[in-house]
Length: 441
View (cartoon, rainbow, N blue to C red):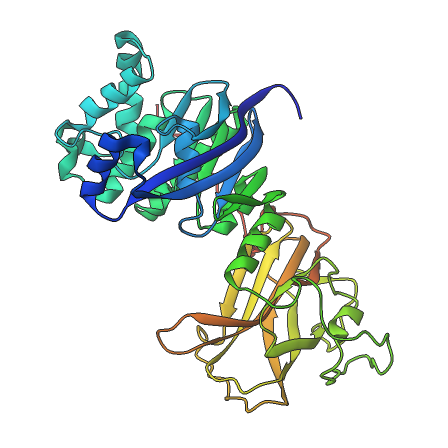
């Protein structure tokens, strides 16, 4: 690991003392070590991590896993119980909504206060204020007390201050989940600009697609401990697996592999003891799988416009059919079948499911098969994509139970010799120009 780091945390842990009654806190202060009236809660336990300069680190985890505590320790608003944290550069942080703001001060006054806390002089603050005000788009509210602000306005002000202080390290704790969509998009554009300028970014979010798309690495915290640290896509999969727990090892199909015996081209294999998906030409060996397996995706057929099984890819805009065989081992009701297309980087291109499409699958009594068909047009820019298939059950107003979710199950390659576009979606753009002469002098 390079010595040119932005953040270095060595063995950091944080313990909070919790009291069953408020009075116990006073008694504890008086008697100190002679009595122990508190319980210890270790929010973080021995975290070791080095974040390089210019690196973007996404942090994921369930509520209460220690994410916010970790960011507060980095930002310096909390001190660790044990361990050390070395910071190399100026930090700007957006932590709890409204944290660091005086509710009686106006937006401008809070911007000046935050800038002064970071050590800026009056001249530098004056120079930055127009950019802060312009980016926030708060209008006349910038001169009103922040206690009159909505949550979206808090975010506008906090983000505007944070990014315009030219930080070396920017910390964001779930703040961008609040506010209108247009401002969120503006913020993400600014974050991309800061990344390109070499700013180190740490952010906590439940939006896993953002972690995959924006981050160089990801950190998964659970129970105050590091469960996974590394390539964002793999870390996010580990996090999702922890939410939808599977008794079977993730990514490891449980069915026996009998080779190609009985694998006929153009036909689904309905064998509850086999995972024939793995014998298809478009199968992705690096798929990620989890679920309780009361239902199992056991085979699929990926067919082109002429009904042929796809093995090497398809043409842009081609009409495709994906036939999927599912075996139900147990009785299942309220079934939902899901379909998602993602880029190599893990960003979602398209997703839908039977519930959204208004299709109500029949209840299953157990020991029976179902065949699901997904028909779609490959309106995608030439490139490599992956298709995920899922089967879940969700009773009305209840949480979903993941039966079998196979992320990146099959590989989709789009061919097109034209190469006249970039991005993801192929929208059949036509471009023309009309010359209308010179303007009068």
